[in-house]
Image (tube, rainbow, N blue to C red; front, side):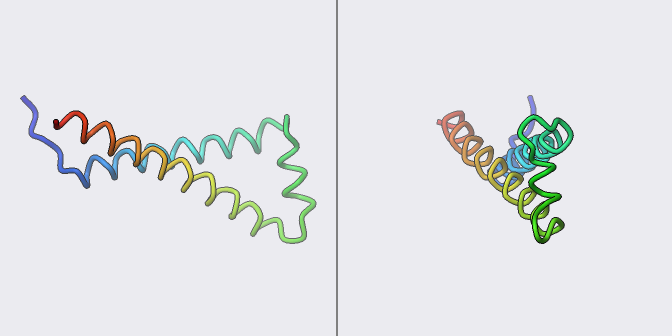
Amino acid sequence: MRPQKSLFNALLTHFLMGVALGLSLVLLLGLIDAFHVRDLVAKSAAPVQTMLMLVTTYGLMFGIGAALTGLVLTLEDES
């Protein structure tokens, strides 16, 4: 029988998995030029800031979503 993880550790794990998923999606969007994201970033006035904003937004969006999902699953598993 495994020792139980604390709620914080479980949520942090889910958050980091979501961030990794979001960052991999941004990488795929940049590499596979189906939606012309690379051209949009390259032709913007400040390409470094645009890419940083894109990476940050996707990472946080997926991370927060995964953390909230993990919270619901963890709380339901405990009850």
